[in-house]
Length: 76
Image 1 (tube, rainbow, N blue to C red):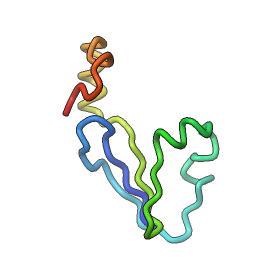
Image 2 (image 1 turned 120 degrees about the vertical axis):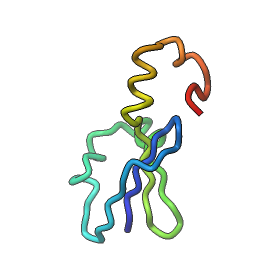
Image 3 (image 1 turned 180 degrees about the vertical axis):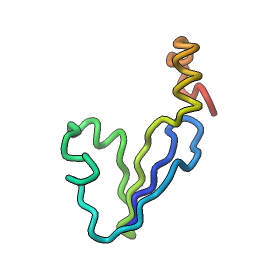
Image 4 (image 1 turned 120 degrees about the horizontal axis):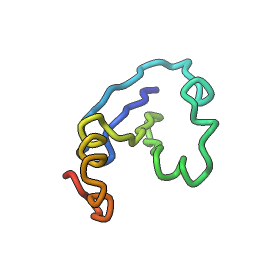
């Protein structure tokens, strides 16, 4: 199983974890609500997991320009 982290805005690959024995508890997924889980985590048919987070570049851009949050895809 691989856990792939990508930016939810620019789709840049941020990193991945390739470990068969990693648990959702170790990744901190257990602390998410069901709504957060469905928004952030996607499970592939081959068992891989994609986690959508915000990269540093997009985070800085959004903090500098908060009105970008009103746009559907502000930083594509």
